[in-house]
Length: 103
Figure 1 (cartoon, rainbow, N blue to C red):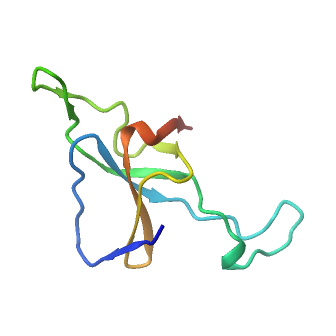
Figure 2: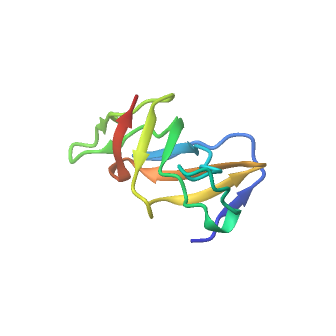
Protein backbone atom coordinates (compact mmCIF):
# COMPACT_ATOMS: atom_id res chain seq x y z
CA UNK A 1 0.00 0.00 0.00
CA UNK A 2 1.35 3.43 -0.87
CA UNK A 3 1.98 5.93 1.89
CA UNK A 4 0.27 9.30 1.84
CA UNK A 5 2.47 12.34 2.50
CA UNK A 6 0.82 15.27 4.26
CA UNK A 7 2.07 18.69 5.23
CA UNK A 8 -0.36 19.56 8.02
CA UNK A 9 0.16 20.28 11.69
CA UNK A 10 -2.74 18.27 13.16
CA UNK A 11 -4.79 15.25 12.17
CA UNK A 12 -8.16 14.63 13.83
CA UNK A 13 -9.55 11.13 13.24
CA UNK A 14 -13.29 10.71 12.68
CA UNK A 15 -15.64 8.08 14.10
CA UNK A 16 -13.89 5.07 15.60
CA UNK A 17 -10.55 5.84 13.94
CA UNK A 18 -7.22 6.24 15.76
CA UNK A 19 -3.98 7.87 14.62
CA UNK A 20 -0.91 5.82 15.58
CA UNK A 21 2.76 6.83 15.47
CA UNK A 22 4.65 3.80 14.19
CA UNK A 23 7.52 2.53 16.37
CA UNK A 24 10.95 2.34 14.74
CA UNK A 25 11.70 -0.96 13.01
CA UNK A 26 14.60 -3.14 14.06
CA UNK A 27 17.97 -2.29 12.51
CA UNK A 28 19.56 -5.66 13.36
CA UNK A 29 18.49 -9.27 13.58
CA UNK A 30 18.87 -11.24 16.82
CA UNK A 31 22.16 -12.58 15.43
CA UNK A 32 23.53 -9.06 14.88
CA UNK A 33 23.10 -8.82 11.10
CA UNK A 34 22.30 -5.27 9.90
CA UNK A 35 19.13 -5.07 7.80
CA UNK A 36 18.82 -2.80 4.75
CA UNK A 37 15.67 -0.66 4.47
CA UNK A 38 14.20 -2.98 1.82
CA UNK A 39 14.41 -6.03 4.11
CA UNK A 40 12.78 -4.44 7.16
CA UNK A 41 9.24 -5.46 7.98
CA UNK A 42 6.64 -2.83 8.75
CA UNK A 43 6.32 -2.62 12.54
CA UNK A 44 2.96 -3.54 14.00
CA UNK A 45 3.42 -1.62 17.25
CA UNK A 46 2.84 2.08 17.78
CA UNK A 47 1.66 4.78 20.15
CA UNK A 48 -1.75 6.39 19.80
CA UNK A 49 -1.42 10.15 19.24
CA UNK A 50 -5.06 11.00 18.40
CA UNK A 51 -8.46 9.30 18.69
CA UNK A 52 -11.81 9.97 17.08
CA UNK A 53 -15.00 10.74 19.05
CA UNK A 54 -16.30 7.16 18.72
CA UNK A 55 -18.72 5.25 16.56
CA UNK A 56 -22.44 6.04 16.70
CA UNK A 57 -24.76 3.26 17.81
CA UNK A 58 -28.34 2.63 16.61
CA UNK A 59 -29.69 5.28 19.01
CA UNK A 60 -27.33 7.94 17.67
CA UNK A 61 -25.18 8.18 20.80
CA UNK A 62 -21.39 7.78 20.69
CA UNK A 63 -19.67 4.61 21.87
CA UNK A 64 -16.47 5.51 23.68
CA UNK A 65 -13.25 3.95 22.35
CA UNK A 66 -11.40 1.38 24.48
CA UNK A 67 -8.03 3.02 23.76
CA UNK A 68 -6.75 6.47 24.65
CA UNK A 69 -3.94 8.81 23.66
CA UNK A 70 -0.60 7.50 24.89
CA UNK A 71 -1.51 3.78 24.75
CA UNK A 72 1.01 1.51 23.00
CA UNK A 73 -0.91 -0.84 20.74
CA UNK A 74 -0.37 -3.88 18.54
CA UNK A 75 -2.34 -3.69 15.29
CA UNK A 76 -3.05 -5.91 12.28
CA UNK A 77 -0.23 -6.20 9.76
CA UNK A 78 -2.03 -4.90 6.67
CA UNK A 79 -4.53 -2.61 8.39
CA UNK A 80 -4.99 1.11 8.01
CA UNK A 81 -3.57 3.84 5.81
CA UNK A 82 0.12 4.70 6.03
CA UNK A 83 0.73 8.44 6.43
CA UNK A 84 4.03 10.31 6.48
CA UNK A 85 4.24 13.68 8.27
CA UNK A 86 7.73 15.09 7.80
CA UNK A 87 10.09 12.26 8.75
CA UNK A 88 7.63 10.50 11.08
CA UNK A 89 5.46 7.58 9.98
CA UNK A 90 1.88 7.11 11.16
CA UNK A 91 -1.01 4.74 10.51
CA UNK A 92 -4.69 5.74 10.51
CA UNK A 93 -6.62 2.72 11.80
CA UNK A 94 -10.12 1.72 12.71
CA UNK A 95 -10.42 0.63 16.35
CA UNK A 96 -11.35 -2.90 15.22
CA UNK A 97 -7.87 -3.28 13.65
CA UNK A 98 -6.19 -2.88 17.06
CA UNK A 99 -5.38 -6.30 18.50
CA UNK A 100 -4.01 -5.42 21.94
CA UNK A 101 -2.70 -2.73 24.26
CA UNK A 102 0.92 -3.53 25.16
CA UNK A 103 2.75 -2.46 28.30
